[in-house]
Image (cartoon, rainbow, N blue to C red; front, side):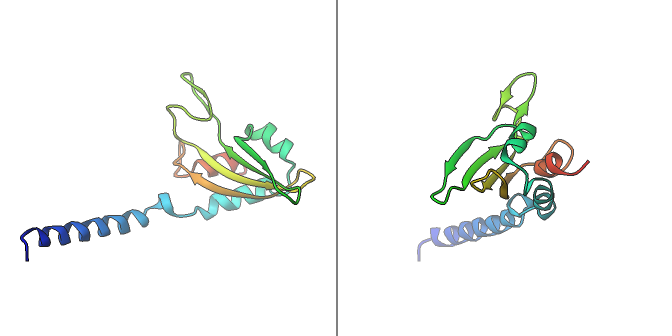
Length: 129
């Protein structure tokens, strides 16, 4: 047996432990409170009203049945940058499915970064005031 084998096994064990630890972090967990706030606030809303209130979509794809899938990311507005991305990475990304009449059927969180004052940027944006 070579002397490197125990070192390689220890590295593999350490790497596996690190991955399991990371998997347990809240970054990879769904935020049920934020998803609930989005569902309550936007499901049934017209996509026009949504985009007027929360900002324009990033991508749009028409489905064969006439439904439309949108990728939306919260806008970032700072003195240094305006737009989808910038120095500020406190964003919320949502996949929106609208029916052929333009009503939102689903709005699913794709990515929820820490917010300005909470652990969820999506919750900060969509929580009822």
